[in-house]
Image (cartoon, rainbow, N blue to C red; front, side):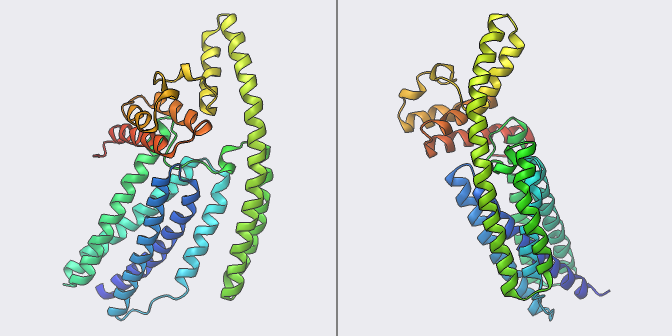
Length: 323
């Protein structure tokens, strides 16, 4: 196989992977915890689409015929990926995203070396640009995973399917399984039918999401009352470990009083002062308590963003990523 053929083959693979990357970023937008993360994901998706166009241009310049089927398959692959990962924990979905980015990074690096050898400056410049972009995304996903490992909340939050366990998840996933089968059957059909299948997937997702939201709300209210009662009983009986466990579960639900927060007088602070105070926090537990409390009370986006920035800084230190 000649080097030119290798480059063409790798560029075709990069088109497919970049198309999938774009769609994955767009599906992650709904999971963004803050407006800042939402904007970043939208930008990432737009940049992935632009990279796809740039790779296609180089394919044409090298005499390679762009794969007209690949983009549609890439979009469909991302839809299926989002479907199947609903039954998985958030960290598994993110690890798969990270695997995709590593593959993009490694293929781009390989293309860069081939381009240098064959004195193709434009291909080399494109490859360098891809390497830089995917390196940044790898670091971002690594930090998000570190945030999750530290107890979160991470920049991306679980979907309702990933939050609700047991029977509710299995019941909610049934519409997805049905639509996934229909989507699989649509692989060899015309564009119109493929788009219709994706529309049906979105409608099923909306119905299932409404169902799981209702289940989650009911469970949350019941759990809060039960946890407070369990904590009172445990403390009265001197069982500190059980009491602390119940309290930690309450904190995860955002069910804490103002005097339990790590920032004194938090409720009386202005939005700007609250954001400043939150940025000074360095314990993941304290940041997590503030975020959960804020989300279930005033829900000020700038305060939540400030807390997320603080958690990201702690996560970067944990994984050795420069700020």
